[in-house]
Length: 71
Picture (cartoon, one colour):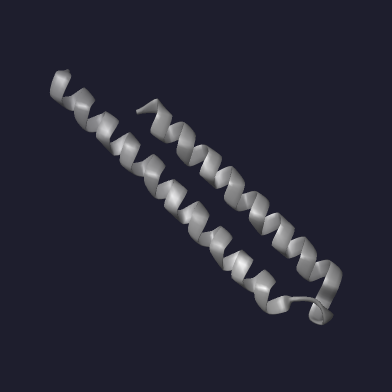
């Protein structure tokens, strides 16, 4: 259970890193750079973070259910 939460946290961290890099590239290159590619990276980062949050939520719900069963 803790492994799933840890994996979710690493996924959030990776998604936020991707977001930072894409945002920095957009700020540095402006419209002259690969704007479409960087926007895709921003959307991928958003999906990565959302998926990782869902993993954490599911692991937490499962842990809560198990505690209710065994308590």
